[in-house]
View 1 (tube, one colour):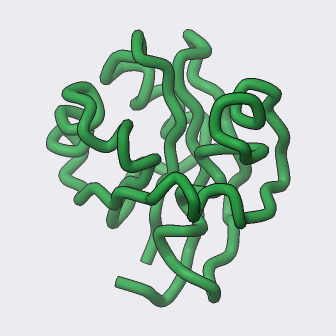
View 2 (tube, rainbow, N blue to C red):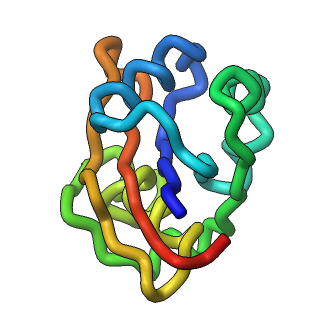
Length: 121
């Protein structure tokens, strides 16, 4: 199973999320994941419908326990993790997940995406 994890600003658009996914080097995923509060954002729901992927909501506490390859000061300050995108992708798949692509940034810098693979469905 392939999951794309996302971090994004409140002003992000579907194009922002699409760009971040494209920058990660993957166009098709089984699911998309982000922090629970962000998973209910209309733009994230619209994006999920656009690409035909289900949404996985990750509790904030789960994000803080995951070691990330990249470090964003904004993610560290606001979410207590180095990368929301990487942490969300890995958390969605559980302990046997592996990161395929570290955090990528959308062209407009409004969204980030990381790709993970794992056995969880």
